[in-house]
Image (cartoon, rainbow, N blue to C red; front, side):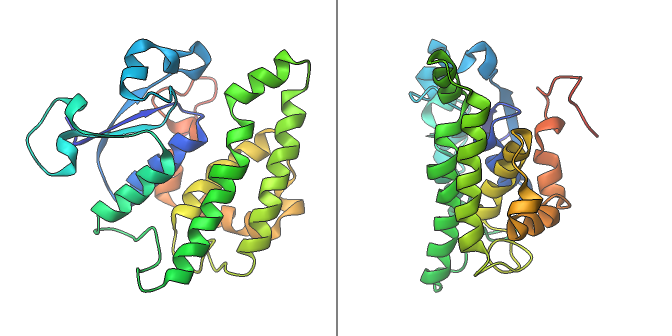
Amino acid sequence: MSEYTLYSYYRSSCSARLRIALNLKGIKYDLVPVNLLKDEQLSESHRALNPSATVPLLIVRGGGSGADDDDQQTGVKIGQSIAALEFLEETHQQGPALLPPASDARGRAVVRSLAQIIAADTQPPTNLRIMRRVRAMGGSAEEWNKELMTEGLRAYEAVAREHAGKFSFGDTLTIADACLMPAVWNAERFGVDVKGLFPTVAKIAAVLEEEPAVKAAHYFRQPDTPDNLRIE
């Protein structure tokens, strides 16, 4: 049993962020699928672990202290993806850094701002829970998502074009990129013309798509990916 357990849904962009980071840092983890379409996140057992009734949920046995503790209830439970990304960065110095060095406060602020354009402004109003509410009110959830995802990527493009190299901030893959790549997958799914509208984002995404850590985290390469969507 690995020290880390990730509760995840194959098409959850927030879960994909953590899969990218865990893969990038070479951290082994056990994956527990949670089917959002079947409302498994709303079960009493899942709520007991994550009161937000969402994924991802990252559990670190023994609180990350290295203690021998197999009881997940006594470990660290992180139910927000950005907090989990920063936890991984702070506790795993080995492997690529996901943030600029502490001496570069400006750079860290830029990376965090880019990440939050996706994690705070774009993803929350376009997730499955909101889509269901839009449909219940007679609206088109698909058009809703397309418009809001376009707005979010427009903001990301404007900030990233000032700082991008190979990746969103220079030539190092950061938490911003871990948030961006699933957002691009989602945007393309809902018909956003990413390549035509957002050249900086498209350039970054093309590089990210070739990263082994990103490939392994792709929606269609997960244990719970339906057979008809699975890719190699």
